[in-house]
Length: 126
Image (cartoon, rainbow, N blue to C red; front, side, top):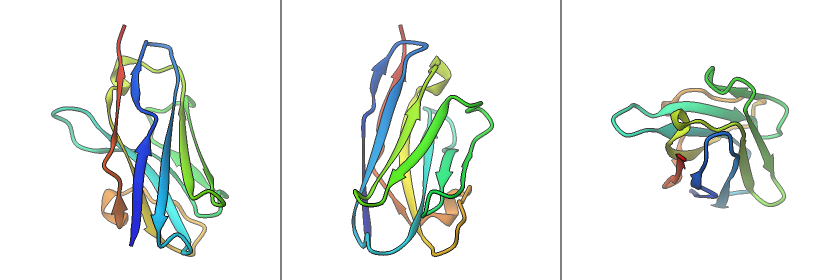
């Protein structure tokens, strides 16, 4: 079992930045790919970014357009999402997710992830 806890959300003005963190506990000795998803009110949960267990590969949703960076520190069992140039369209609850895997892959689909955090709210507003 892997437990995930997100932090770093909050209220930020348009054009601002936030750094989200996801701390993993429990079965952290296993290799696992990580992903970030988000869900705005009335919308489906959508893919934001993903990273392989060894940080070799990363991928992002089309809407990111170079504004976000996913990274991880396996020594600290944490994953980060640096978000820059935020707009009101980025307002959503952000969730991190983990998939136990030994491959150098990232994963796009919600159904591929086995563990989820409770989410952290990001609100972009002036």
